[in-house]
Image (tube, rainbow, N blue to C red):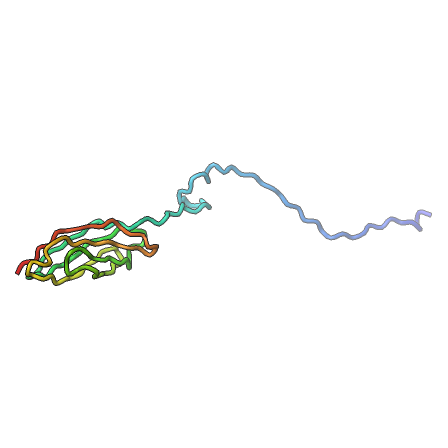
Length: 140
């Protein structure tokens, strides 16, 4: 009787197991860029550009070299617009990769261009810088 009812084992598919491992996370609190730190550094929000230097030097009769530099997250290609009660009103220049700019402008020497020259920078998010100004007095 025992031979007739022999127990057979059914074949089953292999089972997979998952192992959960806990680790301390204190070292992940502050992203510092250390090797092995999986957190990314914080992103810096876009801020308005700042014109940090601005100069106007007369290089010949009424011919001025206007120069300066702009600090911004992406200083390349910013548009600097000149204004004031001078012939430079509405003229523009684009910054170089390092944020510097330079433009030569011919002012009238009859006294009508004597006054305040202004400049303002606009970044790619349409944020504007402070307005910088300089007095120019073209000579004949």
